[in-house]
Amino acid sequence: MAATLCAKLRPKIGWLPLTQTIRHGSKAVTRHRKPMHFLKQKLMAVTEYIPPKPPAPPGAYPPETVVLQEQESHLIKLLKQDLEEVFRDCKMVAVAQNNGSTSDDMMMLKNRFHKHGIKVKFFPNQVMRSSLSESIYSNLAPLFIGPTVLFVSKEPKVKEMLSTLRVSPQMILLGACVENTLLSAQGVASYAKLPSVSVVQGELVNGLSVMVSQTSTLLQQHPTHLAALLQQYVAQQAEAQETT
Image 1 (cartoon, one colour):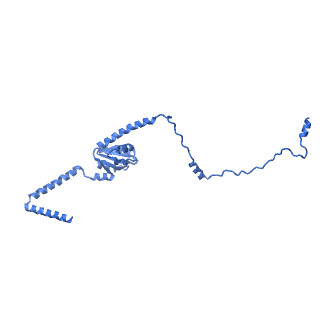
Image 2: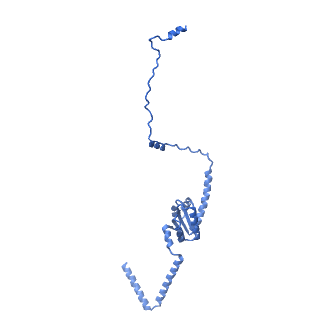
Image 3: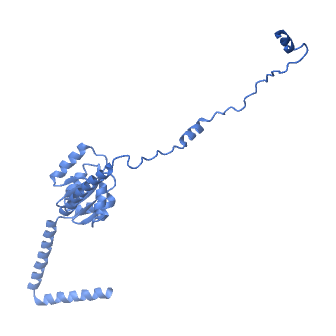
């Protein structure tokens, strides 16, 4: 039985098989990725979209910011009170810009100012601008940009301040408030050239005494001479009016 089945299934000579396997040749791959220029690679890397990080959900962190804001507000109030006392008690408040002075330079500057009764104070620019904007010294607020320093004294010692600042070139004078008068850097230099109050009072007294002595000598002269002088004065006044 098995022999008969094998004889039936065995292909006869000259017959083709029922199924024939055909082997195709390999196809050429033409879809290779072209190399990208390195400048384009850099540009693509720089311009690649980076999605923002999702924010933390509310309540994920404890409310520490509220406590910090309350502490800062108390500190700012204290600094504002100190600043108000400075402008109320001191007749000279100068603003200078600090251009990279070291701690040793600042210590030397404080010692030199202390000899003349001038103090060096530091206030944050935010406190200065917020407090000055509500006062009569609001024109000083634009000076507080960057690292600034205050030179204060109860008496207007402008000459001493300028002579000390010449030794420390790191400090650049921006402006000042001297006896409730706002001055620029040039105005401070002009104020330093003015004579003191005692010198002006002495000059005024000397001028008044000279005028009194001239009047007394004029009155002691003969009446005819006095009348001639008065007529000459009237004539000069008439000529001045005619020319005008």
